[in-house]
Length: 370
Image 1 (spheres, helix red, strand yellow):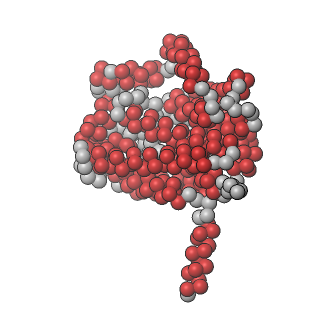
Image 2 (cartoon, rainbow, N blue to C red; image 1 turned 135 degrees about the vertical axis):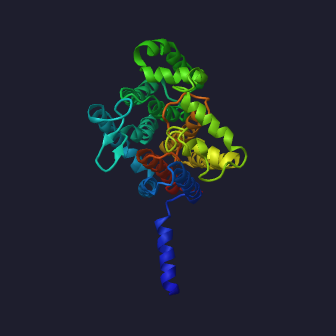
Image 3 (cartoon, one colour; image 1 turned 90 degrees about the horizontal axis):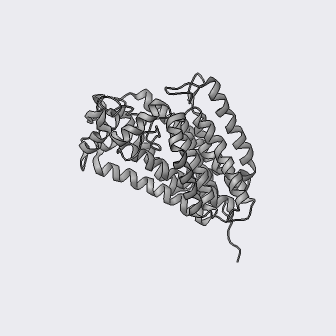
């Protein structure tokens, strides 16, 4: 019996050899919290929780598989992965469906959001391109990398999906930043965006997108209309206090005051039911995940590994900031999910896949020779 147990233990160790256990532990904790909050937000609908749990298991499987792939192999695959992820972006413009455009492809059993795939494939592609050039990047390198970022971002904007487009572009821009691109380049890019903002307002933005911006500036101007979402979200956050109302006791979600309470605004449900203590716990877990990714990036022995791990860690940080700022009324509502809390299969799987790449950087890090 002891021999069998030892064999099973050794088998488990070999199975988990490439997984970063501290990072995995934080992710599992976030998933458990996410399922618990989803169960409450969905009025104890086990079907939704089971589906999200299945997505988590699928994502963990992809994460484990990618963690076993050496970074040099991932580097070689980057152009192929990037090209393959662009095809669904073109397809969704033809056969896609969505509330405000074409964001999803219906596969019958599940809906897939192709734009989520670019959160991983774009930084992989930009890191692949930069790794082959002198760093810090020169003007020509920056222009080509900018085009690599602009193409998928433009396709996502055509859906239109401003929130995801912003996150995808940011993930690619972080690879440029980590490659040594000076801050003033990003200042120039921000200035260019600000310069074309009036044109975008009159010619590019749709009415519901303009409403979101105006609501962000003054949600009380239409409290029963466009301002309803953010006002109810802030009420839910404030009602939680220090310890919250208790699991399943949140009035804003259970009385249907809070919209999208299983997806975009699920963090407001957490705030109301678990209070400041629950919010601080989740934010601490997020901070640990981000810090662990950046530490792994700092320990990487080659340029590609450092760029991809750092870019994915910083992108994870932006997801948290954007969703948190959105539900607190500090940023416009752009439909960005909270990582591993909001219900959604494609976002969960793509996020865990990206963290699998980070784990691969850690697992296959060559040892210094003395």
